[in-house]
Image 1 (cartoon, rainbow, N blue to C red):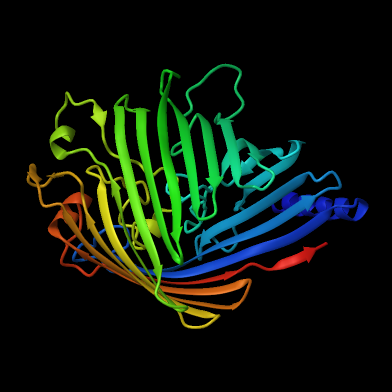
Image 2: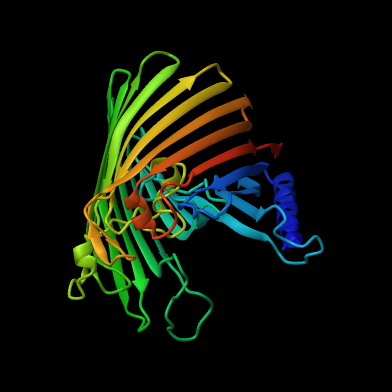
Amino acid sequence: MIQKTLLTIALLVLIQHLGHGQFELGAEFRPRAEFRDGYQTLSEPNEKGVFLITQRTRLNASYTDKNQIESFLSFQDIRTWGQYDLNTTASTVSLYQAWFKFNLMDRLSLKIGRQEFEYDDLKILSNSTWRLQARSHDAALLQWQSADSSFQIHLAGGVNQEQEELFQTAYTVNNYYKNMGMVWINKKFSSTELSFLFLDLGQQLADTSINHFKTIGLFGIQKFGDMKFTGSFYLQSGDDQNNQKIAASTVALQLEVPVNQKLSITGGFDILSGTSAENLQNPTFNETNTFIPLYARRHRYYGVQDMFYAAGFVVPGGLADYYLKFDYKVSSKWSTAAHIHSFATRESIFDTETSTITDDKHLGYEIDTFINYNPYNNLALNLGYTHFFATESMRILKQRGDEGELAHFAYLQLSYTPTFFSK
């Protein structure tokens, strides 16, 4: 795989020298040291925290030819230090992005291949960059924009199959869809921005029939002088892979207020609907009211400690997240921040230990603190420490751990994105 990667890059360099295009070769190095002790879930009394180092390494190449056809390749290696034997021959490099884009006519273009999707507040579609593997999609994207770029329409679609087949088989890849369709419409005004998003995920069942998981919603930004008000509302409908009807929603509001040139304060809430414990325990109830934030940047919005909607964990009763964030710019290179969250479920919780239902919905508080240092444009050092103050309801929700145990998480991340060659 590495030989193929090097050959591809060599061919791109050769094309660049033979033609009259623009070529750039760059990389990303992102090692991150973490101490996990109550990260993503609560600790048992006899469990000890773990220290580990992960790293994502990417090689990126972009090329635009004389006909203004753009292309992009990104290969990545993700690993935990010590994950592989020193003498391993296993291939660890994978293709993260591989697309090309060309104009069908003036202001109308088509982008085809493996690519990232990032839209609006990143609560439905994002690249989930905190995760080592991040996220990209195999799709075709049709893009149109007005002459002044104030109005845009994007249409995307993709069809997936596990491998080459001669006849129809069920698609069983976890955390992916059989087919996808997306419509995004965006309009910018002088101090206002509005977006409409429709996303249809086709999920194939064992009998090869397809259920459609639909998300539709609005996103908006309104500026009042230096203040910025942001809001979004999404509905989910259709049928899930368990043949349950879907009826779920989420609403988010946020106000960002710059106090001065150094300090800004942001307050807001995210409310995601859920299914009550009574309905979950009712065998005749064939509906889910639990909103799934799909491909959101969950780490950014629902607490850095990733207690919710991470690693496949879904909050059945939904989530209410009320937060207050303080961001302080010390200098052009240094900044600090402190974020405070209060979490609660929207619906009652079923306690599997006692086979009872609890109406105490408060899950706890989280405090996230950060120090960021950017000595150069392509080099960043990020230090974070978070602490979660859990309640008994949090233990019931997680079905493990002890709410009295220390739950905290710390990380030190270094990100370097050099440009090796550009012409």
